[in-house]
Amino acid sequence: MDNQDLKLLIENVEKVIVGKTETVKLLIVGLLTNGHILIEDVPGLGKTMLSLALSKSINGEFKRIQFTPDLLPSDVTGGFIYSPKTGDFDFKKGPVFSNILLADEINRTNPRTQSALLECMQEYKVTADGRTFSLPAPFMVIATQNPIEYQGTYPLPEAQIDRFLMKINVGYLSLEEEVKVISGQKIKHPVEEIKPVLGLDKVLKLQEAVKNIQVSQNILEYIVKIISATRKKEEIKLGASPRASIALMKASSAWALLEGRDYVVPDDVIKLLPWVLKHRIALHPRALIAEKTPEFVVSELIRSTPIP
Image (cartoon, helix red, strand yellow):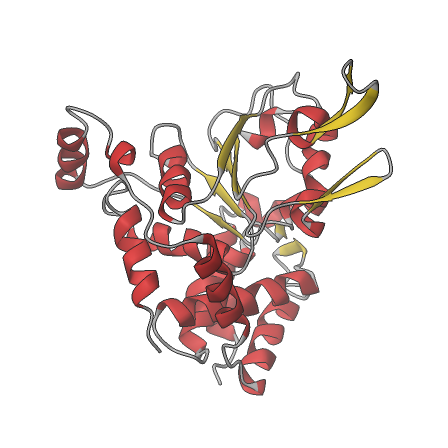
């Protein structure tokens, strides 16, 4: 399968984000599946630039919301505002009406505002005063969290965190990569010069191509076996729902397309499983006391589930 368009997209984003090919590909998996990505990492690692570079590469509309405790739902979705000219109330669209929305530090706002994104992320629409407004296509939320500082934060409820296709991290650069980054920004930031390599119409066609990726019955059963095993494993207090199975199937299909195949293999599932699953399971306190992490438990599930 020809995936030249996707190679161009990856290379274009990497003009801004150095040494993070896997992270870039995972973000593109979200784009290809119309899914949302939660990035949990410390400040200063390029999360905002990663989102902006992807948006510019597809010629999409990019909006950023800095989530704060005083943010209101209407600050996200928009609302009706009285117009003196018409004497009527007109709907003013909020920043959620974009192709890529960066929800920066999403856990710093109150649950009421967090919940304003639920309908947007699940139904791809906004309802206000009984009227429904469709969001543009494609639409993708990239949310960030700081894993270190929790003071003054509101942890995302399970219902919302389950809406994210994957939870990923960026990570620190190597010495050579960091030297390349700072030398590249001596005059101006590379994101200022980035040009589109795909149009939104092409992105929509690629999303359709993902839906046509072949997933055999054996692979489907393998996915369900792994996800259902989370509901029986003693270290896990809360197992993953069927939404996790759907997310894993979609993500694996997108990864297969990125790899130039029109079918999913077990390695695609194994590759995407940690990113799809680790935010969807809650460990028992005794597992946490034993210093087990979601990543470790997921690796155990992979080892204990027979590969087709």
